[in-house]
Picture (cartoon, one colour):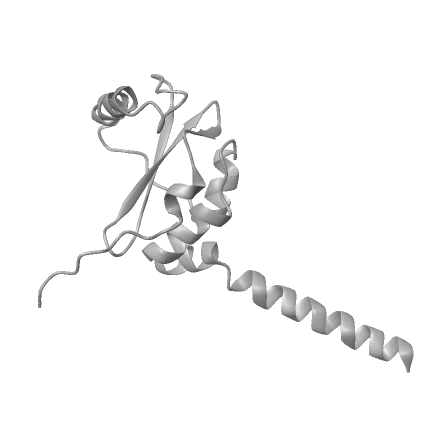
Length: 135
């Protein structure tokens, strides 16, 4: 009797664990590309120093920018203007991945030597207002 209860208890625990994992903001973002789950994942599950592989496991592959040189120039200007936002600056061999949402709000993440840099999860605590097109 005890072993049967224990087995049912373990099965229940496994089912609850799967259900919770299946409802994570990261999975929701991968499935629906909504801005709320993107920001929730960046705020709660991603941290500076994470590998590209870890971020891609959470958010999907991302998209490399079409005009990388233009992005590098813009990012360098921002880093010079707001050094507190980009404490390690920008290097020519940095990799950028773009994650967007169906609400047309996107985020570029910067990686150096395979690790996430210039990332502060607090920036993603609140979702900015999203404009909707007039109907």
